[in-house]
Amino acid sequence: MALDQIEDLLRRLGRSDLDVGHETDRQGALRLVYPTPGWEDFLELALLEIMYYGSHSIQVMRRLAAMLEDLETMVLPSRQAAVQRLSQRLHMSVEHSFVEPEDRQDAEEMDRQGLGLARQEANGDNG
Image (cartoon, rainbow, N blue to C red; front, side):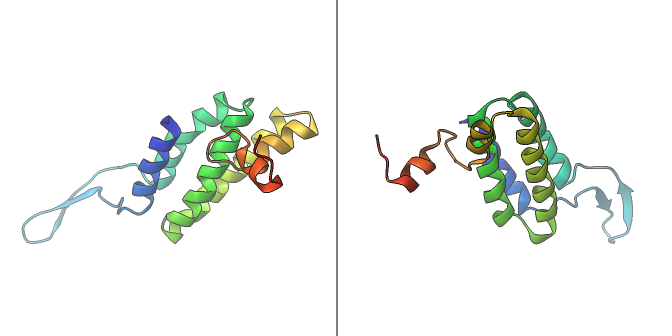
């Protein structure tokens, strides 16, 4: 459920104006510029530690892969490259974390619930 909430927040941020680090006076003259987090900052803050600590969990890897695939289609086009880079990092993590080919294949399978149910539905196996 935590990943669902994180995904919801990232979807909202991915379509929001994050260029908020400036203030103007009443006449519109720029008076203050301050650093604010950008899209990549939010994306990495939300997901990198989960990727790191979940790198040996097939379920976590499946869920993150599905999340990143969905995010890529939901965020502004200018932010899709950052999602693609994180997806590539996730793929590399799976490659390094799972030695057995079957485990690696299972971990690469995108699944919103992380349980491998998408594979069962594709094969017509419900039990």
